[in-house]
Image 1: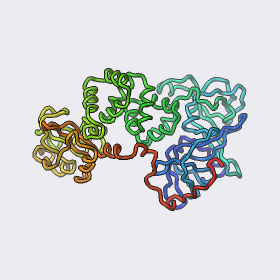
Image 2: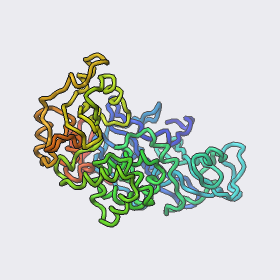
Image 3: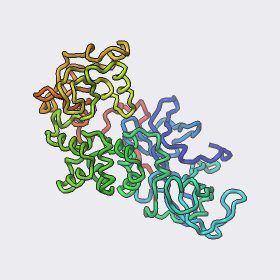
Image 4: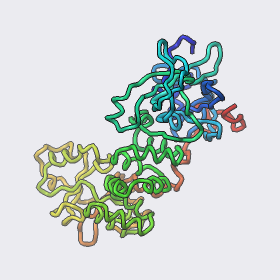
Length: 449
């Protein structure tokens, strides 16, 4: 990149795709690695943390970045797939520099052209920019975009004066995580799917993870918690105020919330259940009564349930709910009243494709799939998995001996319980020769070299 090229603000690099010279995608940018230097010298940018399609995070040195343009990063095509491990002297830009409270340096000299020197007041870091040094392949952080005024919520944030200053015009980027919020980090990753944001949180320090979790709204945090490993779930929930922890549990899918509650000490579990809405707490208790690796322990208590006199139009209106997972939206269950689980008599299932083929006024009771087998709540995990494999289903009804629908098991819940506990940290597919991403041999030197 030529020295005359405009500076690049790191917020524009979040989650952008990384390509090799042939146009094949290597992965996506998840962070930048920098090393702080003595005095007021700008930090040197060592490289990028890139997440492969397998979710493994690797280090990509800046010396192997040939271009950053139009929302993409181009590499030389050769990467080392060894898992990235942060060193004590290294700092992550998204994870550790953004949202930090720093101070403008008294009489620190100008920042942008015509801008006065620092005043000594405290500011919040919203973004930083990097540039490539002239006639060299080195990169450095050269500017800091900050907001004046004390910390506040989203409304306060909009009022603060913002300005861009040179790196030497601020001080306070210590090696400790003091006074660091989470607003800018969240803005950077606001478009991520819950599973991807969960992966970001998993790789942050515990303190930073708690800060980000505290800044998420209840629904977003609930979605993210469902995608996190059990240890991370318990850690985050334990750092929330009890009233908020109960609200987040209510926002989670009932089966996921019940699994999480089951891992807590009995006193904590009962205290949280007492703070929840009675109906939600009753669902949790009912789910926790089943063994974990059974259909009852896997199911959600909130499938789409319709009465026999409902129409195809009614069913499609329920299926359109954007809060439903694709698996739960794939079929509706027809039951006699009451239509809250546990329901009245279960009559059958109507598949989404059938709903698309029949007129809107058609009664769902006239297009039931009555031949589909149901699962008993005590059906073991291998039986449940066999059901999905046999009938090519993405969701299955769980019905008790009295013929009432108790809930539905989805294929994602089955996979979560069949995969190894550390599956989020495991790469399930890498080309043996690394040809798809130009893999280097394992003997290549450390990432900071």
